[in-house]
Image (tube, rainbow, N blue to C red; front, top):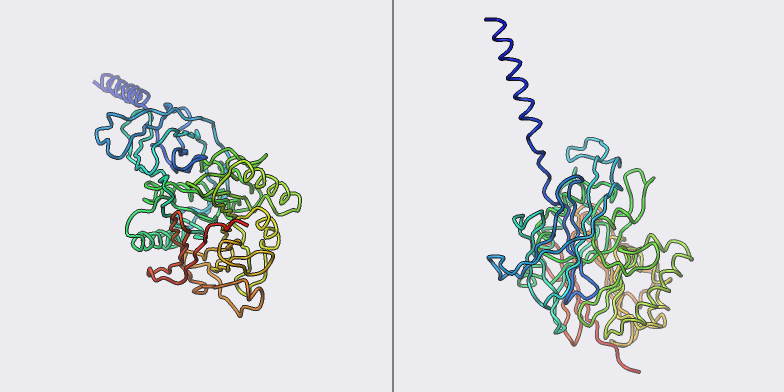
Length: 429
């Protein structure tokens, strides 16, 4: 009897092992998903997502939001590559525990072309068209659209209040707008450490990333890992699908996109610390402007045009003559955590609307890392307005574009209007 029990027990163990071996390992669902604009945001978009190494190939299934039975969906094959840049990066868990990120994946980038302007699309990601439904919209081609503009919320899983403050700020902007925006712009530092993959994955799980097209720039925090030993634009690049029309070494980080009749050029501040880096960026911007005739031009980078605490010039000194020469209408920046807006500026002086560049920089939006402003002592004629709530600042901007003007308005966390700027079309000379 004992021998029989022993044989039965061994057979049960063997059967259990066989079942375990036969059981398939369930792949993680596609994650860290974002939609970025293509070169023409009225007719194209690009999707980034990550999937398991060794798992099944995944695809983007796309259709219009009105195609509720998905009968007209098309399958788009992405470009796939293995990504290991976040693996073994020193990081933090949500409970504050130190750890090393352990993450390797297939990065997928799908180019969505021949889209209809001003159209709401829905898409699924996976081996089959049965995954979670996400959304985005193409920009209208009639020159009328809206965007939220936000930055510097330093998303950090041990302090979830940072992300909550920023997402609540977007809620307020949406309320003020009376409904959905057409897209969202961010001007960098949306994570605390770009090398911490878990921060990106957590952030991209928010509804605003599931439902909107985003265009952004690489901030110094997005560029760094916790130790600052492995910093670089690869962290930002591999969680986005920006157009690959940037200059050497900055493809997918610096880029341009046409937002209707507005040419938007995105720069990487970290690549312009040296004079050589600045020259390389300016040469590229010059080529982009020359090759893309547009009624209006906007440039954005992370580092501030002015130090908002007293008004001293920062990146303004490096770019204002270039912007004058090439008739840039709008210059957006962030980083200093204090809102600053100028009058139209040309030749270092205030000029009439439509004859100069308006410089605007966003405040912070995490309710934690704001900066108090002192007395305005520098560039007092150029700077029209400043705003901050001190260390616990939450603010963001709503951009309303029409064929006649661009209006950019600053709101606080309560949805109160703080300041407004109207950028007029260039006046022919």
